[in-house]
Length: 261
Image 1 (cartoon, rainbow, N blue to C red):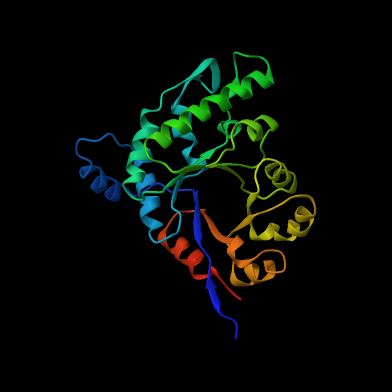
Image 2: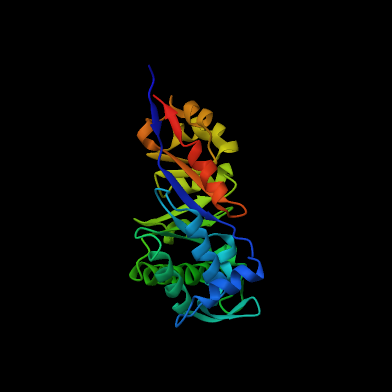
């Protein structure tokens, strides 16, 4: 008789809606002696909603505002000077997140997802390299504040982003699972995450790349069962990217995180 095997559930962040005014006001009243703003609230709420997951993570595309504010030299949507770090708010968010989970991850839009135009270098490679290098410094600041790892998200990743950003605890995640983006990711890392509607590309990818672990975003039990011819159960992970936040979303992801073996 087959046994039901639980799969680990990992967060890849998501999009946090704005709170209603009474909820925000009540939260702000409890923030005595600490710096905070709307994004601080969203970080804390998103992690509270993920209680019980195997890996918690805060951030998403909405977090681009925080990252832009942490890169000096940006004015009116253009990079006007050699970028420098202004990481205080990032560190504050990291400290707030670590208070919720000791091995919390951060989810950052990729440098090119910030939609900042080059107003200084006038050379694409120099421009991208400067943003990637400042990202690496900012991620180090976050790790020093206790963040365990970082997921970089986007639709596509440039060659320089793939070269300069990934590391031991820095992963790339293509939100829509475009085949070209997935192949580019597998050039630099052997773990992959993708939404269920892109699972059909797995056999072709396995012909060309080694995939040591696969995370299925919004996977159901039938999705995981269909992967058993290609992966051992211990190499499968249930993942989520909350489109609208909320505890109910994560409860649903967790409810389907199993396979019969």
